[in-house]
Length: 142
Image 1 (spheres, one colour):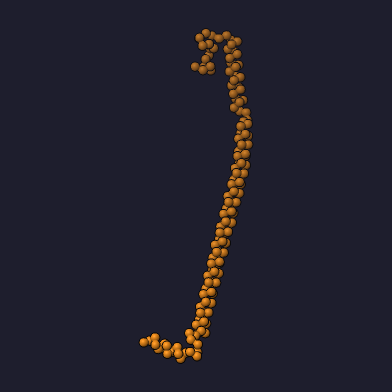
Image 2: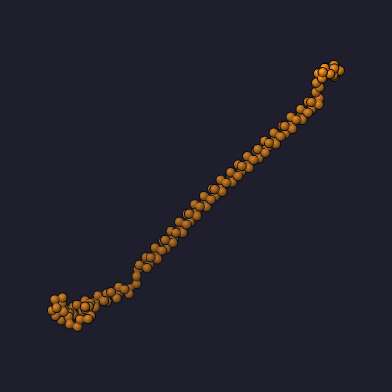
C-alpha cells in the first residue's frame, strides 16, 4: 500500500503516528517530490557535452580523412611516377634494340656489298694465265 492510499498515518507495526511525525513525513514527501520535479525539469548539461564530443569527433574524422587522402594520393603519385619510369625504361630499351638491330643490318649489308665487290673484282687466275686455267678446267671434267 502506498503512502497516498493511507488515510490514517500508521507505522510498520500498525500503531498510529503522532501528528508531528505525520506532518514531518508529509513535508519530507513533498520536498522529495519538489526536488524530483526540479531535477527532471532543469536543463541538462549532458547535451552540451555530447555536442562538444560530436564536434571533436567530426573534426577528428575530417583530420583523419585528410591524412588518409594525403597518404593515398602520395602513394598513387609514387606509383604513377614508378610506372612512368618503367615505361621510359622499356621505351629506351626498345629504342636501343631497334638501333642495335639497324646497325647489325647495316653491317650485314656492308659485308654483303664488300663480298660482292670482292668477287666481282677478284679473279681466280691472273689474265695472262687464263688460257692455262681453262685447260686445267677441262682436265677436272674428265
